Image (tube, rainbow, N blue to C red):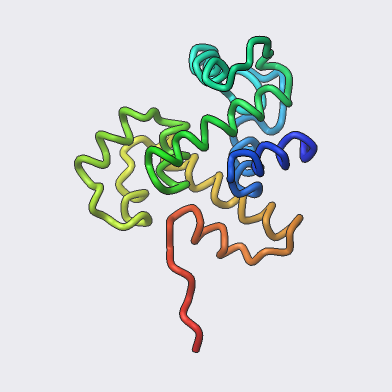
Length: 166
């Protein structure tokens, strides 16, 4: 769903398209009209204030969060910004769900752990589960639509090295 919006957004932001598909699937099941009890709206499940801030930075004056295209474009930029701040998709997705301040706090306590162990220390069950679900969904999309080995996504999410040649 929404490949016509996700593909150019992934390319523009330098993001892995399968991870974007996995994120948007877990955020909204690709329902552009969905809203959360917390107030997040659209495919990318953005809070209106966050969306307004990012849209302003992107110089988007007119956007609608229930527009799948607008939500995907803004959500992709937001994930890109989080990836720039936190360095890995796993931490960026955790921040997307659980908040940047919380991830910074977890980094102060456990930032020296490798990414898999860092994920294991996330104290919010929802955020811990969200990162895992995005990883599984992204691995599925990568395999289904691109023929990629699902372990490529696990390596990308958790900054794992490529296996050595034998």
